[in-house]
Length: 349
Image (cartoon, rainbow, N blue to C red; front, side, top):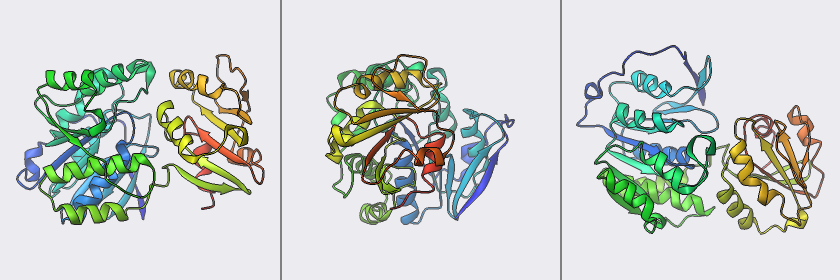
């Protein structure tokens, strides 16, 4: 059951000394990366709780939340999101805590190091380095890696996916920080490929923390998907692929291919955010490829040329539902904020 935790946006006091929270019993984990952070945090919280540790975790994701021993608390804000929320949250968790898992929610390259400085993690997870947040990080995987590695503590222990073992640029960046790198193999599991990768990363952390592997894995495999994760659902008789929260183009394209839908039977709905023009530019080539049944842009009206796509001014979830027709296949992508977030509440499994 969810309750509410209010972040006042005016809290600027120093974080409590982490030594006051029984460092001999603590396991502290930071999760960073372009995407998938919240999923890995949820898995690690589940694993640590299953092995008997009183664990608190914080995810930013679509909706910021605290995962605690007594359930979930939504973090509501009196103002805009701020990097100080991480420090504020650390001050408010119980001093008896035995496990802490925190997502690094900093976007600015200059602020990446703050999460590690405040948490002082035993292990850091780097989920991936796909191109995202282009306005702040630059347009490429290499520039994303350069930003994200700035948030990993010097000489830190880092768990990364095994498929990044061939990324020479990333490994050089980690070597410069004198990090010890652990390559985590994917774990076979039902569902999308990214789930297997995330399970592997979480299991790699479990092993490094000395937790019971079998019990942790069983608990993680039982964990239900987050309501904002990718899902296939029905709306008014239409089949809807809810990929709005994936964000980056490479993962979005991979998810569409996994559905084995043809472009000719698919209406694509891209939800645009005016503060993410770089993301929209990265999607344009794919959206404008020939063969789609139709491509619709909703959300903020883009300032750039749309090509073959069509902008539709949708004000609410009812307006979006009116676009769906029985028997259609809809692929939603881009950004979940706004009307698509409201859509998650009315989906049929």
